[in-house]
Length: 330
Length: 269
Image (cartoon, rainbow over all chains, first blue to last red):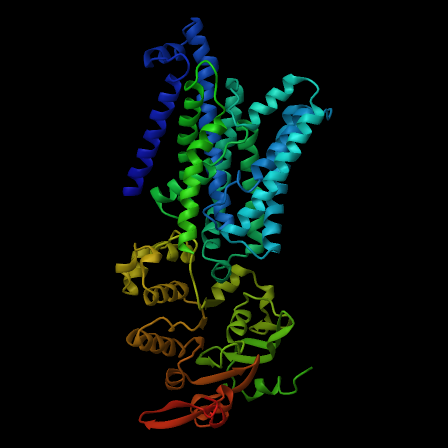
């Protein structure tokens, strides 16, 4: 009963945020103007809204959902409320892969190479962090985060080096740069359909992980006692989580802290069971990024603030509060 | 290296004749950082019976229990489930056969008992029925960290037993309980031992000897005694296991143990 109310309330909030974000921009649009644009009006203003703003708003919501979902999977796998793809280097790995795809002439269509390399980067770096933390015997908050931070710094440096060494034309450098700072690329309506399909697919595809993530949260001993084989489940969950991260990074660049905050808000809303935490995190992530992207587009008109800056400014304090609480508890 | 007494232990086990061993250990060894935490343990456990596992700290009781539950892979030897290697069963199958209750349990997320039960039983089972059956409705929606240590143990044991596994391996389930609840728990475990196998690590020797049929004593990784409870209770070998001297106090219907430090230790300070 109450949980159903929570879901409807969250969906209502998302709808309102989408509407608000569609209105916001360096030229504000009223609701009737939006309606005119949607009903096929041919004025320039309507066409701009239909081709640029609306797909952008929807894409932001999708990227947010992917970020929230990936955060929930990472926190579940690492059993660590501070785990996040951005902090653990998974996003950095995806970004490195995507940078290679954008700057190195590989002779293959970029639409194919970029997602594959982004996924390979996210997967490889997550496995590396997992291995380093395990070798150090520390799957706890501090050990894991330190391994992730070290890896993220290395990946960032490698990516900067590639950018300096490989881009002889400033145009592509600018593309990479704006994307590294986090920013939603406005897709065509067809591109948006693909993104929406991927997002929905990810939400559905992660559902079978829910039970395993629940059991993992009981600790290895009890998880095994209740029938889970962590040695088999964790690599599978990391694989799926990396796919989600790669999708989020390919469409939204490096966006910090959404993957950290969304699962916390989701658990507060619906409790800790992953069957509900996963979709709820996606929903919360969608809300957060929709709002953040609207701010990014409208706070400094006509310039656009990188989305990653907005989420970092808002999410950083959130992370510090969580860290302080955790350190005090232990 | 091989312990010649390792195998005769099995034969000496006071199984009721003809009782099929449901769970058995064959020459189990567990190495940890160069030392043998468990050293050549062989055991045969019958399909029914309440068995206590006792011994001083660091004797290897918990390690033996987790290997028997299939949670830890032995360095040598193997665990047999109905005569076949336990390793061949999947974790899901092991979970159906063997209920394991760890000494310490702190979930990473603050779950409720209802959620914990759901993880064990699956979403299709009606939790209200299960909770009512165990008189735990009051705890259903309370978060784990708001429960007292004793309440947590009771809730965890209920969850472990919710699938009614034929074997229960419990690592000091009564440690955090008050007198009444500990008594109730040990009573319930002994009851369960009438038609199931219950193997429990116990530190409270009086409770162990009063409620369990068979007592296995471990010391430095080995099984040093494995006998009927009443038999071991009166044997000086028990004093040697714990390196104390026991006064055996007659308090019908049972004999209570009072430990004294050994004489040569007594002079030390």
